[in-house]
Image (cartoon, rainbow, N blue to C red; front, side, top):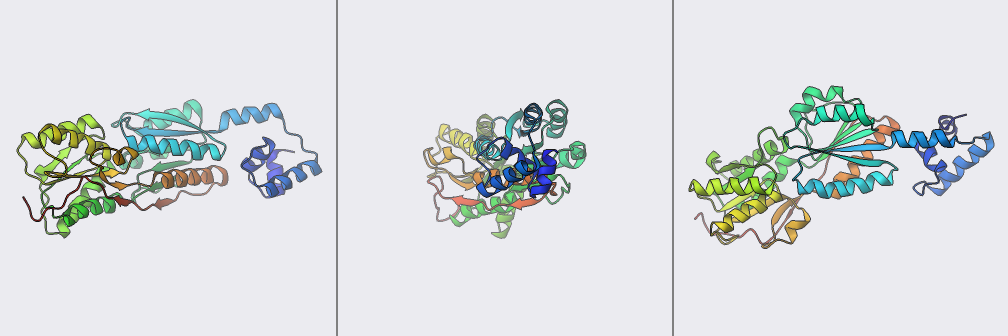
Length: 336
């Protein structure tokens, strides 16, 4: 008699039986009572050594984090760790360079520590199209969703980046801005691609022609954004507002603007993206597009655990973003 037999007799999952055996608190009292009664009736006695070995070998979920300077990921990781622990799993973090191939790294992780599943924070859609077939464990791609990816063992959870970026630039346009600079990541970054498209959509809808000269290429870190904004200023580009593809990029851009003698928002308005906690405490308070990190984390873990414990197929879940108004955007009566 094994715990698989107990699971079959009780109608519960193997993981639920394991949690009952380990006297965990995340089991409903009536379920626990039912399982214990069946175990008693059939005379089942757990093998403590085998049980402990199984726990050590199979309760890891790896978070593959693409980029070390993304503060939104830092907040999301805290929430992911908490949600993972609620389900009785251990979260293991693996940081990658922003330009690394996350699938190559994940394949090595699977060989070395044999996790039950992987949650990718950020990723290249091209890399997933080319190499995800070699990933044989349940996985979730968090913060990126794409209609181009179709794998039975891959779920996706995130906002609609294109729609969200469009709402951010719409916000600037409603405040009278028509010469809008855009700072963001390289074309290899799928969220960056979608956010640029969203910005262009908003401008086109308002009869504004997007000026490529007002696009500043920046990684998702302070220093890169600072240099990108300085480059636009050095070229003498005229703009009254900036759409930054992350709050971190917005902070770097604002520092460059202030260093150049530009006031925010009196001279240049700035809106960011992510809605991280720091955005509410900087001066001026940063207007931003908020990604619901709690919802993304919880849904990502729920989908992964469902794949691990119930062999469900991957799903895509789109969550809603929200404009957070701040003091970094001012209205202007006309283009200046």
